[in-house]
Image (cartoon, rainbow, N blue to C red; front, side, top):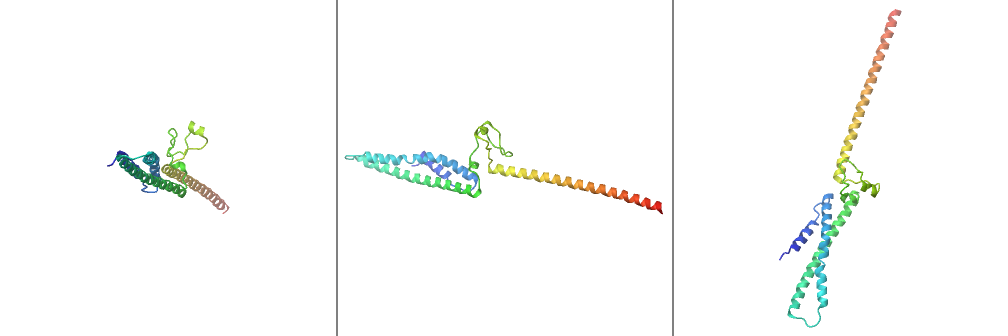
Length: 199
């Protein structure tokens, strides 16, 4: 018979499965790890209950004692299996997270949500707030998606400025050459007139 707690345990256990090794999947898995901690502690309860019941039994046992002890043992075994399964999945998620952070050189704060009054925007690296000033000069760090957007926007701005500067320099160069050509032609005309007068 499936109990609501069993369904909850199954859903939490399924939430610890990593479908892909990216920041979004790891963030979801770490959120489920936080939810799995209480379930991990609850799985110890039937184990402790079984140990306590076995220790408390003394004297001649009645007919129901054997059946109760068997049921308690089954629950304790299920608790051990659930505990080990959750613990293995939690350790796997944590190991994959550490590997991802080392492999991609991403600070651990990237996977941490910002405070409520200090939410980063896609086009700014820091936000001035009283909380940030009290905590120190450290700014708010953006997530991966926001960093990509900001990098793309800044790159486009730099390219646009370089293009405008190059176009302006080319225009000035053409104007200088035009002025030099005009001055050269005027000088040649004056010399031709002088030669004609001499002749």
